[in-house]
Length: 338
Image (tube, rainbow, N blue to C red):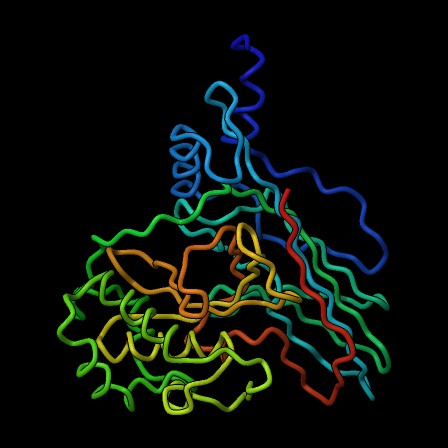
């Protein structure tokens, strides 16, 4: 293929510019500051991935790297007996990309409500995007959808990543050492040191925690309850993905390793379909001077994780916070790769 024919394809991948926003339907908005140009470290990782060749979901044409496109979104329908203020943390986090692994957004998502209501966009202290609105009385639907691009490759583990001593941790990571509402690490300290204290510090010990949680808890949607703490999950040996994440986070913190909670889109890309989609909870752990994702629920690298919200635990990253009564009458999440 002539050189001049290859350049547009490479430019599209490596020097992607945000698409110009087009007209939106009534009741739609684009939230500012999310998506857009890839952060420099992630962009470099994408260049490296392109040079390295194709993965399981990419193509190779004379060394040219072809990205995977992931359309994603969700639709939530509520029935409110009166006008009800809502705060939704279901837009993609501004720092959703983890170096060399996660998709990025070439343009911000589209947010549509039915009926149309004014929308306000803000950020909390964790950098989460807040979609603020007042739902009118009656049936109300919030729909968010977007497009991401991925390298289509599984995140590569890095067993050489070290833990940092507490005195060397950055201030921003210290918050994630302390017990929180659902991650009661103070109650698990004795267990954590007895079970994992003899394992060499670093990536391997965190992976041992993820292995333990994955094998110790039984996943059961019907056993979900919003009051279950990490110590409860350890004792009851059952839970949903947020309980897996809470237990893993609490055990890391008990060993003086900062860990934080994430909620994400996570489609069944490259794995057997597991039924209707839901949002996925996992954890990020401070190793080697950066946040590294671990997923005790699935306990395996996955393609296409798109982070929505972060916090100390699920209390800091609720998908929807209602300041009034409502009934959930519809809930749908999707990710489609092509």
